[in-house]
Image (tube, rainbow, N blue to C red; front, side):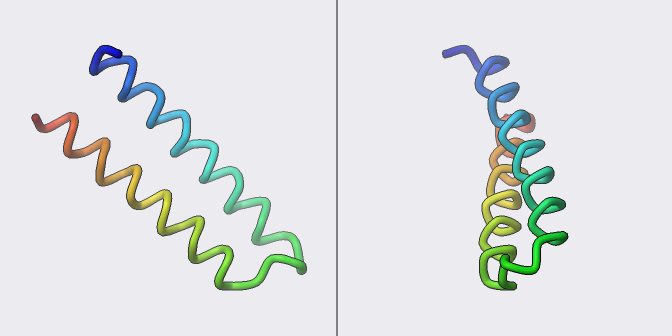
Amino acid sequence: MSLDVHIATLENRHSALESEIAAAKTKPAMDDAQIRELKRRKLQLKDELERLRNS
């Protein structure tokens, strides 16, 4: 997989998590721990994207 394709895939996953977090905030069944986990995964993707872009 080329670097550009890998970055695009990570960007798509990051956007999907952002949408999932927004939707989770509107659902009373989602607890804070689940939302924190989604945010943690989103931050990991962001960090990976920055690392790849800067290399």
